[in-house]
Image 1 (cartoon, protein in one colour):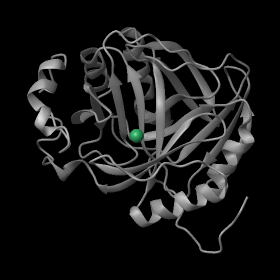
Image 2 (cartoon, rainbow, N blue to C red; image 1 turned 45 degrees about the vertical axis):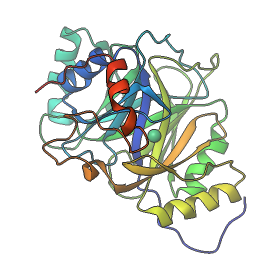
Image 3 (cartoon, rainbow, N blue to C red; image 1 turned 180 degrees about the vertical axis):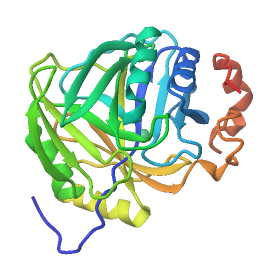
Length: 311
Ligand code: ZN
């Protein structure tokens, strides 16, 4: 790998995770009603404006709390397997773990098994369209979920993926352990305590994953600004990665590349954020369109399925 001499601030962790779901209402009801997330942006897939793009997060849509969905009505289910991001995990206050586990089991969401991973309990759930998600006990206060704890990548060969994280993003290898579901789990962590600082890389035999409802489309890492994103882009190219030019996603600027294990990675800037076109109180309350799609608003709104946003 080519190395440049200049120092670069390390990546602070995850910016957002984007997944594919079925019909939007069930998705919205689960993430707001069951998990207590806030719908912070209701917009459309900029590359396919006939489909919603829903963003969930904390009150203000902080990086490291953002989970987004492309909800395709009637989407065929995907299949979990290597070459995919398998699951995202939220921090759950340690004191609230048992109550959450009991409630989710009673409501039929939890798979029922609590496993242990690097010394912390993990509760595994499925969302209404089959997406695997996890709640990991953490030393945080309150009863509500915190931001992301981690994402698990499932790949055939962890080493090249890990090298991107350590050599380009500045992550530290925290070691590995046997996974409760089989195979081996390698853990890497970004410096600092921002939410979503951990990436787990799972090596386990399996048939390659297939994209569809209930699977993760891509995961995005944080860049503090455009300059840092440009620096990361140059480093990725020096490491042999094919990276897109910067793309304006209205709430952040994005670059994308497919990491060696097959997972689509994005690097997204923290600014401008979700309050660029709505106040904190308004977040998620109306359909927001980027300027290029605004002339088509009437047609887009007529085509989108109705969506009842909880008060
Ligand atoms: Zn993204």
